Amino acid sequence: MTGVPDAALRVIAAAIEDYRTLVPPDRSTPALLAETIAEYLISSHWTVTLTAPDGA
Image 1 (cartoon, rainbow, N blue to C red):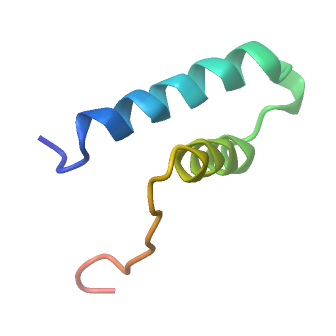
Image 2: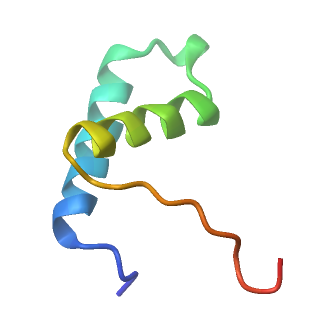
């Protein structure tokens, strides 16, 4: 549906679950979560490529 492979979505879900478990709520930020997800994807040998959205 999103064009993101199921295997990548599973890595993202694992990163989110670990983040929720390991990072205290008072230290949790969207930026840190995004960084954690990127680290999990990269360590799982996915390539993270930044592209500008259409019309940007």
